[in-house]
Length: 299
Length: 111
Image (tube, rainbow over all chains, first blue to last red; front, side):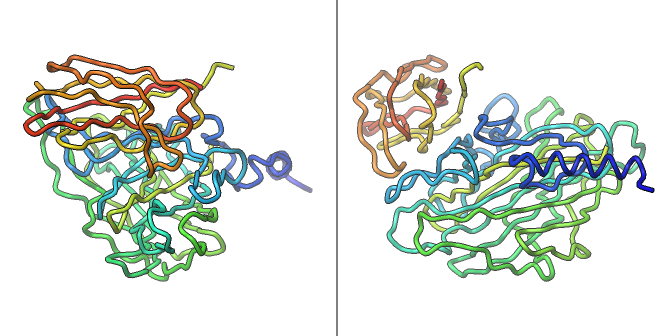
């Protein structure tokens, strides 16, 4: 006999698969957000650095950040590219300087320390300022969580920052591999009130290769064409461990994976922030695009 | 449904000297924009007018025709209304030798 829970799962799955906007995803039972950028920015915003008294106090890594855009992926040679469906994607653009980064962030909190699943359709490309392929002009595309345990966790609770990036190229060499990091920069106090600290978790240092993380992604023959990629990252907020990482047809072994872990901070309980970022390897803007993002949880 | 509305900070604490401009902002979805410029520090030297520039691709720019004063004192604000700008928008200024302004530039869009 089929259990009521199994019947519920079957019904839920049937309803989702009948809905084209959800059928592209494989969410956990509760959808926390389904951000289709045809409906605006959906709460994705600029990651601004911490400061006190003066914006001059902001670390340069954060000072360079600018606001994401709603983009049709317009190109000078064939016009708007559009998204997987609908007209718009979220665009994260760096400045035109080697090593420049930019981040878009969504700030949430969680209501159960259990499994969560992040899914997105993404692509990236350099600004098409030259009539050549430019496949090594993007250094990286990646994503991160900024998480912290709830205020009832007790001793030993951490702020945990899972990071993963696709290192596309470095110094002009096409590397195409996934990396992670477990180190941030030293924590630095800001200002004089004793309330604000900062660290640059996206610093170019301390990235480690994900074993078996080499992946050749689809890229097109000219610098204006793109193809959309599927990405899924499963994480358990109870154990603060990654459980699965998939990009297109590849599921990666996460045995060696770990996150940045620092002691819990006094103001960030139950934090669930998600960020996506892009980085350029040349003096040319890097563009990362998200067609849509689905965050789901098991609760 | 309410129309789409967005505030984007396109330059924050950026020091403008010589030829300066905000990063390209894509907003083809918007019918209108207001660009605000605030001086975060006392400006130096003789400030020129700022100009609105538009672009089809974010790379090749044309003056839209609007010009407006840059803020003359710390925390002063100037602005320019823009409509029918197509796709990419930026604020640009050509500052003479010795002139300098630290700006906060925001763009407010409505569909």
